[in-house]
Image 1 (cartoon, one colour):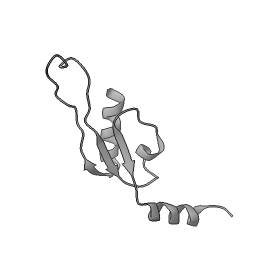
Image 2: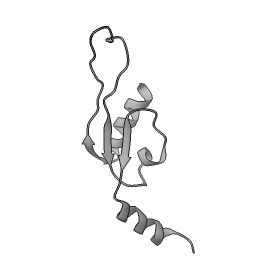
Image 3: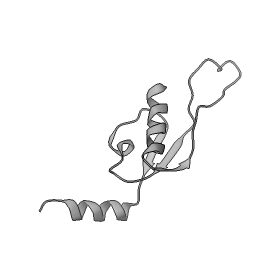
Length: 78
């Protein structure tokens, strides 16, 4: 859980826009002792670590396809 929450914090620190925030979830009915995180969606760019690292949790980084493709074309070595 610490790894996932540190990724949530990192995404916010790097300036990723939080589209759907998923802090720790409060559960009941016998599940109070578990570790649960609500889904989180970040909008950013491929230079951010949350886009480069695999996050094992309900965390999804998204970016504009047009922006990403144009940037890769402009920075690729031909």
